[in-house]
Length: 311
Image 1 (tube, rainbow, N blue to C red):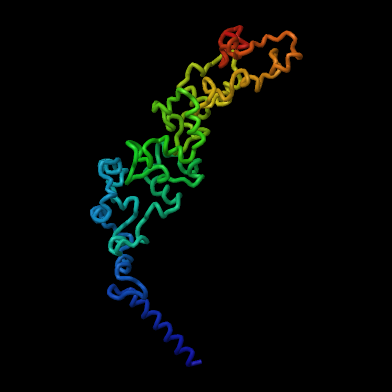
Image 2 (cartoon, rainbow, N blue to C red):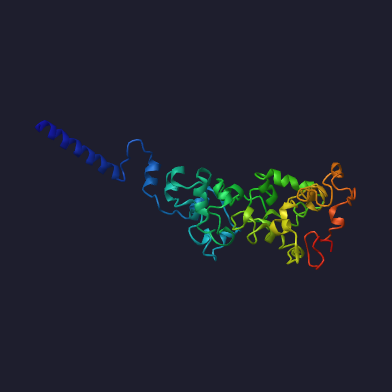
């Protein structure tokens, strides 16, 4: 029993001695490199931007919005590089050990977003958290690059916004070539004209309002109404008949006239196809023409006699 107590006290003494040696500044723990030991002692301490640029001169962000010291929300007004990458003194004194610095390329999407949204959390970025792109595992650095931007504005990873969006939305961007006259392809509009990629309260990340129609009528106010006689598809969703990203049909219709109308209006005074003429002996169908030849006010009518959108 006495021998057991002696061994127990001896093991405790050895443990305390080892811990004390590990805390001594001049003595290294087993397996630790000199640089790493020095860095570990300075975790949480800032080195200063000049120390960062001594090794990472190519990462200087001079001339960018982040370099505006007069703006208290910018990195330059705080700790410079270390505002986003974390305290870097331990990193500098450990010969650049990556475990003492935040590298967005090695962080999870949520961790990267958390860094950016410490400042970018208002205005257009207010609905990023929980938004469609956030839920799909994308992050700020998926589309933006602070140190090596390729665009003239927006710090994008490609030269144009269209190229960035096309990395994921290839099918949608391909539709732009279906139409002869397309403002997006001509540079008059871009994806962010209608969509807020950082989050929105509207469907499909639309920028304005709370419905598709509110976004469309912000540029096409003549289609807004109010009308005395309303066309239900127009009231519900413009995309029922139109494809805003482009179509091979006139007026960006999702199908050719009269077939687009016959998706709803089957056997209503006009035969739905040439085989249905037996149903209506007195058909007034006009071959080679569209329904809007007669129903010209197809988006709605304010005329007292415009129930059938003739005027």
